[in-house]
Length: 126
Image (cartoon, rainbow, N blue to C red; front, side):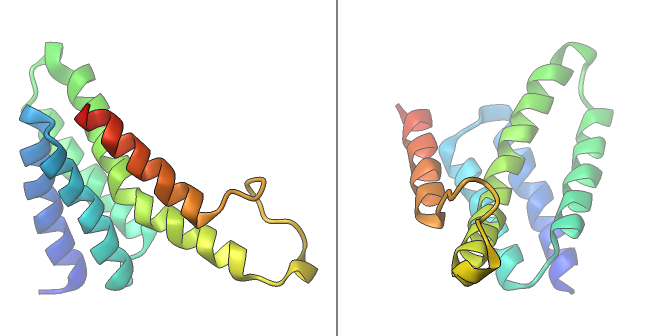
């Protein structure tokens, strides 16, 4: 099984676990999926396709009255998955020489991104 196939399988399980209860453990699994995707060199566009495919399948089985809350929860889950990609990108920008010019994003650091992620996680627990 390829890394992308594994990601698709695990993403579906994790998202379906998160949607009904919106528990921190399932959300954390999304974050870990993002880390695994970066390590396995799954591209951001491939990850977006996996999310899209799983999300469309979820929507097909969602009652009309529940579409907006499900969409909001799926978006929150995706943000957790993408957090590692964001931190990796910021780290790459930080590592480039100052001679290349200012960093996009106004100098936000990877450590700040990690701190923001930790703060969001703590806020959800409270």
